[in-house]
Length: 453
Ligand SMILES: [Zn+2]
Image (tube, rainbow, N blue to C red):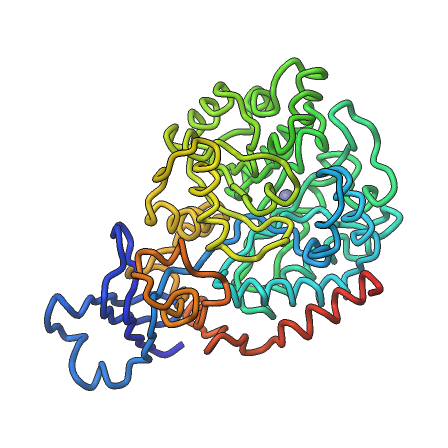
């Protein structure tokens, strides 16, 4: 790719507490080659001709946002499960109904539209926690990784990067009950067969990475946890695990194993610096100490936790312990990393009835560099020389953001304010429109195809 230059009215550079005005940003072959705040004075990069040809980016330009926890097909449930009573478990029944109807073609169409919605909201990389592997009766497709390949292709077509976190899902409960009904599509039989299948998968495209997931302590027996963790460790791949999303999971784990889910993972050698616990909404203080000791990260999904009435994770205690925090939209009731980020702060306020727990820069890091790192992309999420050239420009003249100081964007902007998105040096969204996907039309068609209405 040729050299591209942008002139950002405001850009939020790494390790800065607030954005910097008038920054010249240059990239070549998908990486930043120069980042020059013009206020520092003249340099070879800032000649009149250079500035004249630079693409203007009015508003605030951020690094690419990372959506570290996604189940793409949950997008079909938006607005269909929110009005009634119930809890996570009743919501899950509806989710299984949609999961039962997907095949590789319909999943490609749905995920392409869902990922394009993410691109519109400024997401440049998604962590897809993938457990819908097999055909409706639980038998593998001719290509046993056909569903994973569909997700990788969907991300390519939507113009974003993906880490396919292939989830091992073997049992229906901590006590080891067998998978039943739709759940049979998730299972590989045992962890060794899971590893065989994942070993055989070579995602097509430089936009994709392979990762692993333990669905939860409900879904992988204790004596098979190390097989999954060992595979990830040998591959140098990120490993994600749903952890303590509901008190019921903690209670069942204590009953069966005599310890918390975090304690069980620690005992079995699962925790480590390339591991991300998703949710961790109901940890004990000993659990937090274990996560911190092993330098394991936590991916918070506040809008999903809110929607499913799961509770509020202790984000400030986690950060105080040194646990890296990332963000995910998970069930896609909302796809808006600004909303996820400010919820980390606002939920703490509701819990403590005090304000000011996280700085704006800390929320930005959770939405950007920490999320990319949790997905195995250590060279993304910062506007700095040598990093992947992802740029997300947020309008500062919309009804929501007019008059807002740039540092206040994470408390004011929504996904609808994202105007320009560049992924690996390539423009994906221009003037608020996805360049290749008609997002509302494709979402509607894909959702009607799998829900029937
Ligand atoms: Zn999830």
